[in-house]
Image 1 (cartoon, rainbow, N blue to C red):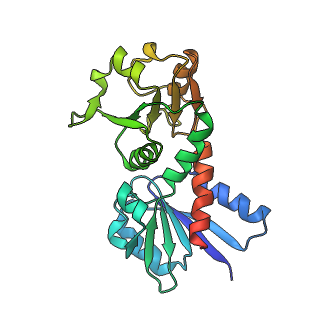
Image 2: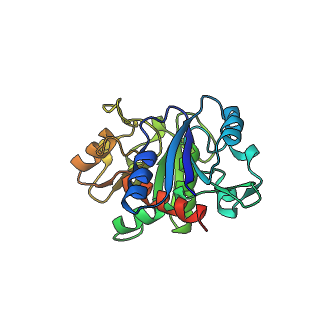
Length: 243
C-alpha cells in the first residue's frame, strides 16, 4: 500500500522537502508520495488529518511549536528543545513529536570544526534556533542568542561590538533574512570584525550563498549553508517515521 508523507507549514511552495523525498522515492522505487500541506492556520490541520491517510509529517515555520496540542507524546529531545519538526503516526493513530533539526545541524557542523569554538552567537530566537542551541550544548559550546528585542542573557544587534564578534568564533543565522527572493538583505552584525578564524553558518539554503555568507567569505571565514542540515534532518525524519 502506498504511504503518504508530507510537510506542514505556511507559504511553503519553495520547500526543499517535497522535491527531495519525491526524487528519493522514485530513485529507490519506494511506494510512497510526499506532499505539501500549506496551512494558513494550524487549526486547518484537523481537516488534513481527517481527509488524508498519513504515515508521517515534517513541520516547518511557523508551526514547530503550534503543533504541540495535536500531539499525544513528545520525544524527550523535542521536549527539551521546545520545537517539533517531525511527527510520527503511531499504530494506534496517535501522534508523537520529534526534532531532527538538531541532528541535521550538529552533523553538518562537525566536519567544519578543526577545533571546537568556545563560544557562538545564534542570530534569531525561533524554533530552529532552539534546535541549534541544543546541538551546541551537546558539543560543549557556549552560546548567546541575538535578538532585536532586549532580554536577559541575550544580545541585541545594536550591542554587538568588536569584542563580542572576536570572542564568538561561530555565528549561526537562524533568521529568514536573506532568503530568496530578498537575497540582498542580511542580519545586521558588524561584519568588519569577522576574521579567517570564524565559521559563519546560515540555515538558509536558497540562495546557496546568502549575503551573510558572502560577507563572511570576504573576510576569510569558513562558510556553510543549510542544505546539508536539511538532507540530514530529512533522512532522520524518514528513519523516525519507519522505526
